[in-house]
Image (cartoon, rainbow, N blue to C red; front, side):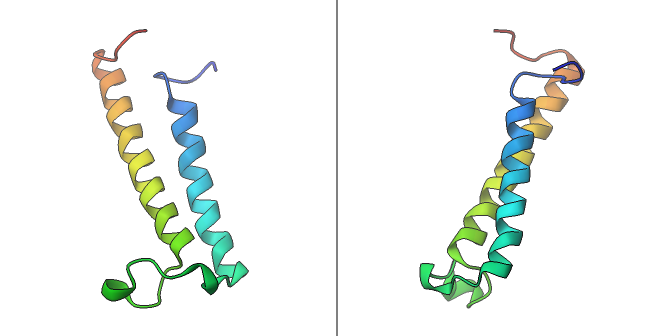
Length: 79
């Protein structure tokens, strides 16, 4: 991968894009039988799959920015 800046960048990009696309597809799927994500706090807004996809995307994007920052400063772990 010619333009990657740190190890794991492609995987983190894949995880974040998968999570976002999964959350969008769940809107059209209409699969409420799987349950609701944080129903007591949010109500019936997000399905379980959408909620977990948002959590996964948030974590992947956060780790992506940490890796990019480490690569820019030159402190990325080499393996």
